[in-house]
Length: 276
Image (cartoon, rainbow, N blue to C red):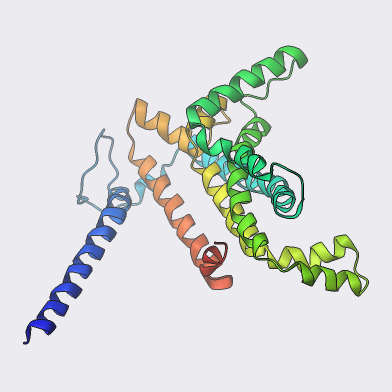
């Protein structure tokens, strides 16, 4: 083998090893959690590899964990919808308007990204207490209170995904539609919205993921009966470890994988690339 071919082979082998190491680093924790969830036992530690294979942990998932998953999904969907309803008009205003200081406005919309989640959760808690003192209605510990806080945290992700798409958008398409007699609303619904759909879709999914996985904000705004799944897991691991937590986490991972497969099947994961 000549030196050039040997060098090329070594380079290819090195890339493969690096790639394999990256995949192991990323997926090993998830694989360990999924594997140990099938070894049910009343103990405060995990055994890997599992000593036995059983579905007992899945059959004994506590009701409060199930309720936490349902609540997280509901809050995540509501937060994604709310962030989209705010983010899409905001992105249109930032890109299309001629008002001065648009860069400052864009910076203001990015502020939630710079605020630590703990600070944001504490700020909303104090705000809800202040509103409750004035109106006798306390939003902390309620579904709507969680949704409002998550909308605040998730809206910058929608704006950040939609603005680049709008910047590449051709306004002449809207002008042509209006010239042919379409109203502004019809033009937006049939021309603008379908063309910026990749950005809207990506931003909404980002918003859902931020909401679903949030702990620092939700931990301040939750109470027994209205705790999201990550908060329930946090408290469960803090107080007493149970294999059923691993089982519930495995179900969430499988659900997330199924969602990605459905997205790939009907939309294609390149929808996220097209937003940049």
